[in-house]
Amino acid sequence: MRDSGAIEQDADTIAFLYRKAYYLAREIGGTSDEKFERRDKLEIHEKKMDFIIAKQRNGPIESVSLFADMPYSIIKDERE
Image 1 (cartoon, one colour):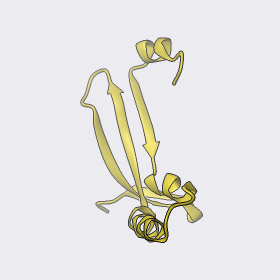
Image 2 (cartoon, helix red, strand yellow):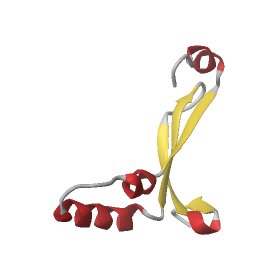
Image 3 (cartoon, one colour):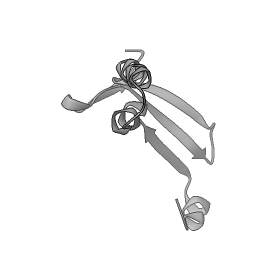
Image 4 (cartoon, one colour):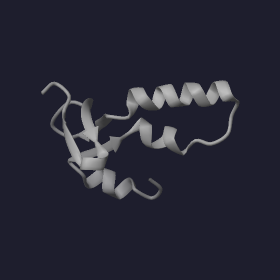
């Protein structure tokens, strides 16, 4: 986030969503072993999303794992 210092300074909370499956699906190339490994990782992470609280002025910095079914736009707490 280039030139975001003022935003960070003024913000009370900064949060990010991260889906490893998004990036695994876009990787190309590699040996057939690497492709199989990437496919296996994709299956593991396909329904997962991380909600990362990178800054919280009056609270802890943490990461929460969520269930994410993107074709149906469903995101919910994994513990439910």
